[in-house]
Amino acid sequence: MSFCEHIKGLREKRGLLQRQIAASLDIDTPMFSKIERGERKAKRQQVLKLAELLQTDVNELLTFWLGDQIYEIIKDEEIASGALKVAESSLKYLKIEKHV
Image 1 (cartoon, rainbow, N blue to C red):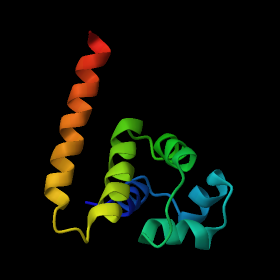
Image 2 (tube, rainbow, N blue to C red; image 1 turned 90 degrees about the horizontal axis):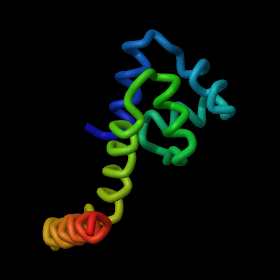
Image 3 (tube, rainbow, N blue to C red; image 1 turned 90 degrees about the vertical axis):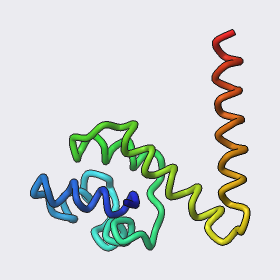
Image 4 (cartoon, rainbow, N blue to C red; image 1 turned 45 degrees about the horizontal axis):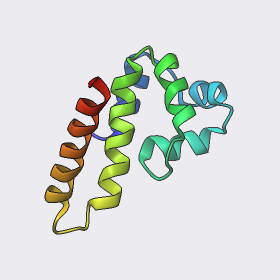
């Protein structure tokens, strides 16, 4: 599931209109509609505000958002899986270094 699908589902589950969310994000409704359709990228601050508005876990929403960003960068690469493994290994190493 993508970030845009996730926020649309959460918005509909809460019975909120796009214009309500857009107003809270201080953007116009067409802009939010594009974010929800995946035609525009939400900014990190907007993701944080969306988590609050949609009453969902901020880390979960950030995970979907970051996942989409990573996907967009590597989607056309034949070696995408290998690159993800290297990145995951680097993150694990960084986590270990921080705890030492």
